[in-house]
Image (cartoon, rainbow, N blue to C red; front, side, top):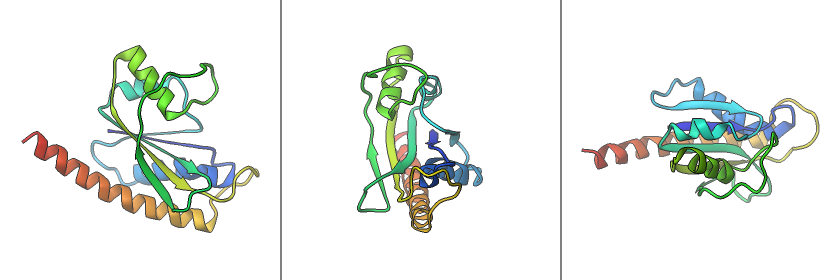
Length: 152
């Protein structure tokens, strides 16, 4: 399983994705590979191709809830270059280049203060981060149990 947390910690709440992945990395969860980056790029397709389950964690704007969790599907990239890609485009590249079709989810953590050059998360974003971590750890335990049952 691969978790990719991405965003810019130098832009306030845009750092929610990296904060999420770094917090989970500190837990040393067996079988969970973790990547933290500023943005998704074409090179992430190779890492994705080596996993059967991928979670993308990023900051989210304008949500009514503290976080969202939804399935992601591969789509053809609209443009390629050194600039950031959406998770669906990276999944599409993994499929096109490597024949990989991992199960994938997007974890969007709601932030409120973006844009200004500022280190650190807002108080409300920090609460959402904790809630998202609690959700994810529970989801992960359930997911692992279900996968174990399917393979028994």
